[in-house]
Image (cartoon, rainbow over all chains, first blue to last red; front, top):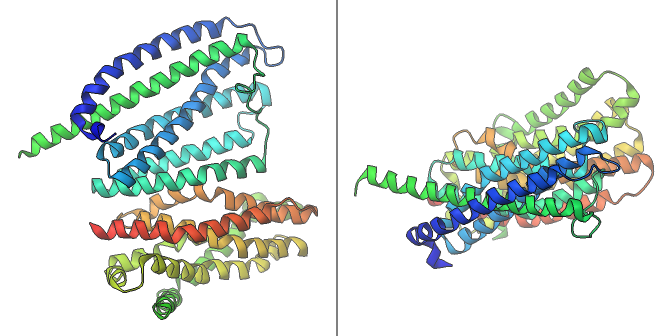
Length: 232
Length: 222
């Protein structure tokens, strides 16, 4: 792991991985969208079932993004791994955007199905709180000027949030549940819907990975440029 | 060791009582928010009784939030936090003492005031009692999570604006279970909210001094 702490090694590795993820993302999203548009309407939801293909993967990736931040923060706190800080910081805006995408698509689906854009359903609400966690995390990063101090403070915040997220989720579930339960792993989803959904999920994940690597690369290059400007 | 702990506790309590009376200000804020809500939603007593628990809980959280800068910020700005950090008392104990002082000067008075405000909201005696107990058990968690936020934002010039954004999402479970416990008592059923609230509160109070101490150490190091 520490080999990849070296930015030069990371740059070499990521410049190989980035095009691979980008191609996977483009192909999977294209195939998934075409397949998704051709599925038969659901007997209950009608054509609104199509929203699922852009909604569920966004939600999954949003959770992965928070997990990635928490994992990178742990690595940064325990091993003082400088690249982990960059990685955690780079993932946060992506997580916020994917969470926002999940929220907006969920609201668009809720209007015809539940009769209102926002129904204070448990999962919508916990995702709204997740969005605020992302925004608070980004705001803290931007507010602390000293970079190492900002990195450590944000790492602590991310871990506190990671400990608290399951509790928030549990409390909101306890409070109100209207959202349908999980149906991918339990095999309740018909294959005609499952396949486009899985392909779209793969596409979203590859997109997240590609954007994440790109953002880390950009930050490393920015830092180099700053160091060059300051001189030796 | 415990002498230093109680000295610090007493010092913080005196500061809360004397310097501008910020403890009293938090109480006034609490009462004012509770007064403004009926002005906004109307004087329907049935409606007010139904929203009382939620409104008073949110108002209590906001009032506790307002006084969080007293926790570490004042001592950090005038340098006394560095002196306190040099004392034989561990920073974890310092954080625990400050947390306790914050609760004694904010959470506890808010709890004691809540039955009076519950009267204004036409809350039944059962509901008032449940609200009192839930605030008594839940407000330590607000101080604990607040201590983490306050120590994280120590070095910020405008930390007061960023603090709510950081800690309010983390406090969602407290509000849910706190107001839920009152609702359960009103409906005459035991929904377990009080137990969850107590569990969250205990865990938060137990873990918070360690996290807050780590954040203070980080901000003193620079």
